[in-house]
Amino acid sequence: MRFPILQALLVFVAGPLVAQSTQSGLSGTVRQEGTKRPLAGVQVLIEGTDRQATTDSAGRFQIAGLAPGYGSALIRLPGYRAVRLLFGLNPGQTLETETSLMAAAVQLDPIVVRAELPAARGLGVEGFEERRRMGFGKFIDSTVLRRSEHLRVSDVLRRAEAGFRLINMRNSYGVTSLYAASTRKFSLPKAAGPGELVKPGPCWMQVVLDGSVLYSSGSNRPLPDFLHDFDVSALEAIEVYRSGAETPIEFSGPGADCGTIVLWSHLGAYSGPKSGSWLRGEWQVFLGAHGGVSLATLTGAGATGFGNRRRAGPQGGVFLDLWFREHFAISPELLVTTKGIKTLGAGGTSQVRLTYLEVPVLLKALLPTGRGPNRVILMAGPAFSKRIGCGGGTTGQNPQRFQCEELLLTRTTDLGVILGGSFETGRLFFTARYDIGLASLNISREEEGAVRTRAFSLLTGIKLRLDAP
Image (cartoon, rainbow, N blue to C red; front, top):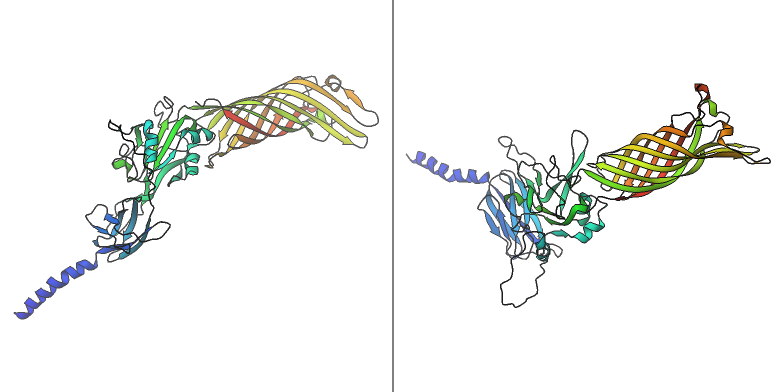
């Protein structure tokens, strides 16, 4: 009877030891960012459990008895910004970590003795300055936004270095979108099967517009697109909170766990979502001016005797861009351009000069490059021209001057097609395009006698937005 009793005792003692060998742990050191000084009294809480620890004088902590798999720990100390640590544990592993906490610069209000009770902090944009004085989050005021109206909201947020990331995603049509996600936390998916772990995905930030929640973390609402859905010129202020711990109570909640972006618009600038978008309007209107050089020639069987070289001349005018959802535009223009041809010979130079008042109506399309303020645009469309000047002549020992009637170039109107592209950076742009004349200038009924214009243009200019509030 002794041996069965001994075996039972061994099972009773060894059973917990085997179970403990499959449990994991978390340990590490917490230091002050910059000085690397160990921090004592830091609270380390394993989220979703009751396991926690406090660092000693050397900044050390240790938590045992954790289940294998992914988890997160909240590390906090009064006077410092809280940090959420994401970790993954194998069975029986004790993970060693190194964490730094940044001191929170809290700006205190001056002490004023009054008879009445202090007013509560404003819940809307009127509380912007009060929330900024608390020292948590990143704040972009109207002064910065007014200087940045030529940029997209995504560019303004990047320049502010607000402590989150914009993830670039492209849909099946090739349209690029930018969505805001936390840099401190990731979503924790459930295991796909026994012992199988899935890589964590982005933790999307909560987005609030004028006090109304457009998206909260974990909801099934569409993610706001910071490349297309918002307009800098329609915004009054922006607040960015990197985590749920930083988010003020007026914006906090379960959906703010990954941080919050708060947008404040001008009164009435946003009338509500339109087809899943929060654009202030479907159309954007720009007025611009451009100028440059035109390298022109005459083609066709009837142009053989006029010359063999391109003639350079000035070109300039104004245009109106009507952009629909920042993807497509209709652009009417009014240009003064010079065309013609010239010949270089031993006896001098011969040239024909044609001056037109041209009205192109171009369709423009934005390429989905995802390059912030730098944009590449393709354009094409018809051009209607009216000749307002014509002449020519020769130089050399016997210079001559002649009119278009002497050259039999009697047609004074032209119809053409323009093809080209443009590169924009902010308000400035550079354009290259090719102008193909379709009408014969000598009104010949015989194809072999036709004379048509061709011109390659290089332009640069500037444009300003007209529909900004």
